[in-house]
Image (cartoon, rainbow, N blue to C red; front, side):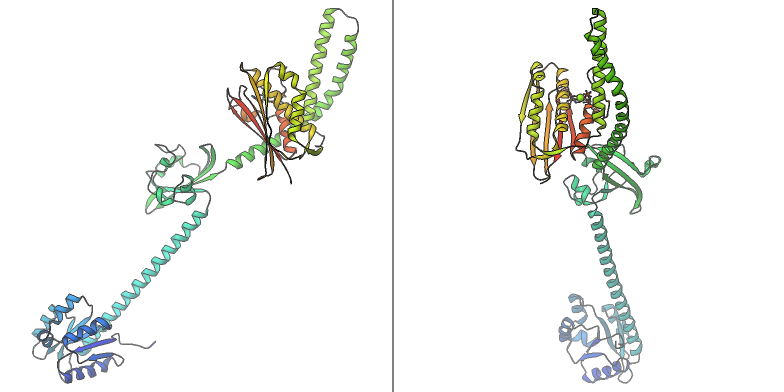
Length: 493
Ligand SMILES: Nc1ncnc2c1ncn2[C@@H]1O[C@H](COP(=O)(O)OP(=O)(O)OP(=O)(O)O)[C@@H](O)[C@H]1O
Ligand SMILES: [Mg+2]
């Protein structure tokens, strides 16, 4: 780049052409590449100032006053330019006046030498350098602002792309920052919730127990906890930080409802499988002596005995039969036999199972309602599925018999083409299951029934059969209103 003297466009405003010419030559001695406009009246000087980028004006002070009020007009128009007043030699007092009027400096008119021209030029030059530096600084600043803005946006985009719920609160629980996911959870945008107390979003008047601030530092002992909020389980992590020199806390909430459910399920399946191995061994061992007891008791019962002996023999026989039923249940539970799958209609299986149990249902005055949907044939083990329905039917019946209302058991089936499943729902209007019992009902040997009524194996067998067929079973229950078991079985193609 060509080296410049820092002054680019100069306007010379003087009455005398000769004076202008001499000054131009003098200036060009210092700055050869300068662009000089000369020979204009004071009035026309403004036209130049308005349209071209003049940085310095040399104006004859006396002339500037006589013809047109140069300095007054300059103030009025607000044009920013360095004005150097040309002062007659011997009239130096005018210099102070010119500066008062707004001149940046003055130059003594001296036909031959323009004595203080080098100083004036130096001053203008240093001013231009300063101006340039200022411009560069401003440019740098605006670049930095742009960079900061971009990087802020970049980080905001990153935290907005995170599906966990993130928010930062101050010492009054007010939200300083948040991500989209957190705001969207309440149907809002981040901008809508900034500076609002976070707990108001949850419809509360005070913060949750888990929400700690820096001032409760003693409670910052662990930075990850699991909490249930509005029926969902969240893993909550929190980190104390400084935000704009103030203490703040970052909260990250991860929805682990599904993970926790799966964990519970795996734990349950694990428990089932180890218990299965154990029970099958025990059941086999007991089965043989039991067959002996039943067989010999039957034979003894055929003999002619007195009533008391017969009564006792019958008791031995009944108890042995009950033991056999328990052992059979245990063997089914540990199921060594793999499922024998064939295309079956669940509506048909339910019908046949109800038929098998019709006598009981009639006797107990329970109404059976069938809401069958159009379901496709699915590949399942008919006998095992029948056993599932029977277990659930008997449970429903027992639950109803514990109330004094008219019983009703409803079977609903449906087909969901979306996730390719067939759903069977068995609902009863029985006594319902208390919340504290609910997590245990699928556990083997868990029963709330009297000794002669339940072994506590029905639901664990049911759970095992459904899981082996690739399905799921869930329960919904309202105490004193009834219970629904929802089975989902896969339908492939
Ligand atoms: N429909 C239902 N309504 C209310 N409680 C139920 C229902 N189904 C199951 N339960 C509860 O779950 C427990 C476990 O059921 P599960 O079928 O495993 O065993 P059980 O019925 O007690 O004995 P069995 O081995 O003879 O089936 C029951 O004892 C009962 O408390
Ligand atoms: Mg049962």
